[in-house]
Image (cartoon, rainbow over all chains, first blue to last red; front, side):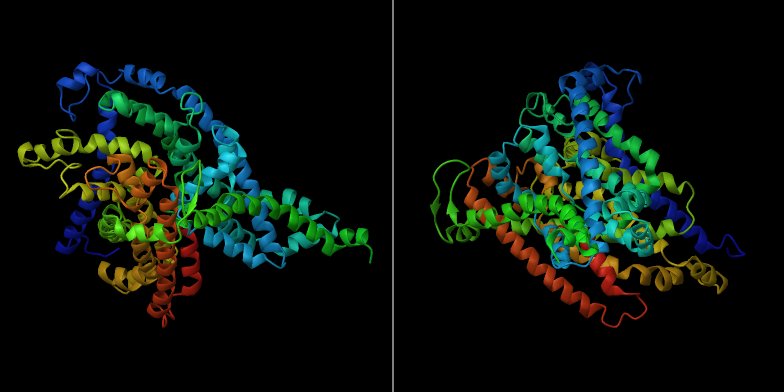
Length: 283
Length: 316
């Protein structure tokens, strides 16, 4: 932008700029890259070499196979997939329909309900499980996939907020003219507004999807049959205990578990950033 | 008007759709949040396990919170996390600013820094156990830089440093998402402002001070304040990496243990209610502080709305 490109100041800035981004990137990927390196080593090679020595054979997938079987990851991927499908479908419908009535209609209790969701976000989730556990027990939801799915399906203030913001930009005359044409409110929601909501749905799907895929605390608590009801996150618990120092296996398991997130990230980078910028929810 | 014609009227149809669409979300919210919340408050006055007899003990559980050293200690531990998250906010602010200017391979660097945010907590636990193990990743890097292994501490055992090690894992995980959040706010600045500044001969510092910073000062302040309350509820790093061993157990780790290992449900509930009370008080203070800080913020468009938005976005 300036005419004189290389003043001492601009060179210093150039150096500082690239040093910072490269250093931070290095620190960010170092823990992951070291896992990738280790996951390709044989256990003999792992004992003999240091962590940062590159593996002799980059195509040694033995650890992946072994970890996949040991941690029952086939089952885990299947369960996680099932959970994702139902939770995402459910929470999309629940969240968007709730936002629809909150945004489009005035009725007593409208702001009470909004406040209830806002306040709920303040309640510490982990602490709540002490009493949620009892309720899950009474409902017979412990050790069932559907119980876990129903528990996860509820919507939260963040996604309601994203939907409501989007509804605010959809003119109400849209609803009006459809109503005059004879459509009822369910139809207006389902065939007119829901399709227009796509970008907001996308944002929520990604945010919620990552959250659900990575959830391990409740999955560990409520899906106690670790053999059959494991999710990808909880299947990694296999590697605690006696296997706790076989890092060539553990690393392979960890890398497999984050592959789906990596693929989604590479495909939907922009939407993910938008979602996070719309709502950086920190644990 | 008889009842059938009400349900056919416009108002009646609205009522139908409202009720139908509220039923499930509000039902789930009550079933999994408010009902257990009330239960939790009730439990906090009892001496009880998950199964078996309960005994009403009044405020004894609450008194115990202040009498048990392991619980008192955790409140001090949260200071580490507070420092960590403040550092994280400022580092994120710095990186976001850097990315506001032209950087080659911008998406690549951003992707690297952001990706840890998408990894599950349990995987992060393994990654960092491995990272900090004696002679492994971190030690090899430091040895390559000339450090001697004998001079390096045990990152997860040495109580002088292990809490910082855990805090680092949390900064590592969330730095990218905070950066993207700030970057989003910075990008919402009208592009012509940058161009106008360049034409006026503004240098990088001017641009940062007069254009970038005003656009994000509310969200940065808010993040600093939220990191204070957030640090009280720090849970994952010690839970997944050290299981709370060697003096790394935070409030929730101790609570989790009391609830599920020793099954003192009453005491655990009292702890949860206690922490919630602190969080609510902090939230009110934060709102008040915010009104004070931005009372004259005429240039910062609609701070109140932004605050509300940002508060909604960041649960605890």
